[in-house]
Length: 415
Image 1 (cartoon, rainbow, N blue to C red):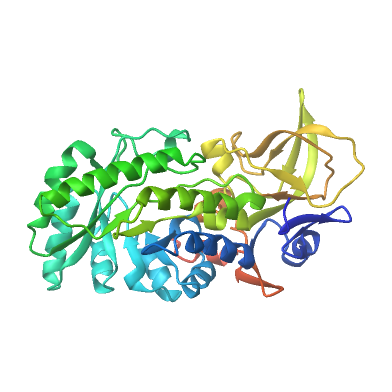
Image 2 (cartoon, rainbow, N blue to C red):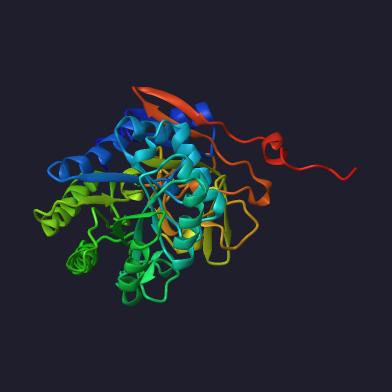
């Protein structure tokens, strides 16, 4: 628990609001975010790098709600985007194009053109084919595109294999053994302004050592290029920092940032980071109602109104999410499977949870701000939930619950 998430008289409160009251006002399931906690998390990065020439680029994929992007833009954040849609969201929300980096292994012509139109900070390039395409499209606009080459340092991290991105057999980046000649190739392209080196080793990484290791590799590589008259002005070490709980978020960010800053030393290159989860993850939660309980065989089930379509990470990544009852009750504690209404046996939010639960209870899935709504779907034609932000002691709905009209808007019957 923390000052943001605490119990008062047996009832869970988030950033000063009773979650029972939030559930009553907006119904369930619904996502709730804290503007204050998002702000504090972002500022923790800025404080730690204040002595460096740095750019903190929020990873839009973590949560692309335009209200969250607006808040971060007002705080001076940069943005890491991976599609034309994400780029357009950032611009619409007031983000500065000069602080946008465009990542992603499969950028389309439309993606690249849009980035060029807005004169973004740079593209993180992942292949020779992409480099040539950017050079061609920049020439079509009579521009020089600023690019960093994303190298793959072949670093193994302790995380789910689906979100490890720095091994040599992963689809991301340029093999470290091939990168040297790629930098020399890029340097000679007419419409390319080669500005930096980048990498991203994965997500949900709690140990700072792999980040320090990857930074050492980048710095060594950069110094070698400098001897060969290739001078780069920026180093992008990606994102992926995991935060274990709300209470330790700023401390975790500070410890990570200080370790990276110390490793960076007194170098003058700009350092770029791409945090997503560590800014928004513990600043959000998902409220859900227990529809009913049942017992099948040896297991007790609590069937809730949120499913894998609302929050897919337990089903997809086997994520162990913390779940709590919003209000205390006197029911006998039992071991429950917390499952959703979707027609899949993989539709679960928590397994083997010792809890006191009865029908009608409101449960809270904690640290759900990142990759929650961002990965939500309309599977089973379920309406995606609303998103609420606690801002200036007010509850503001920044996305409405979907309706039948919403989910069929782009469909048509056969005439």
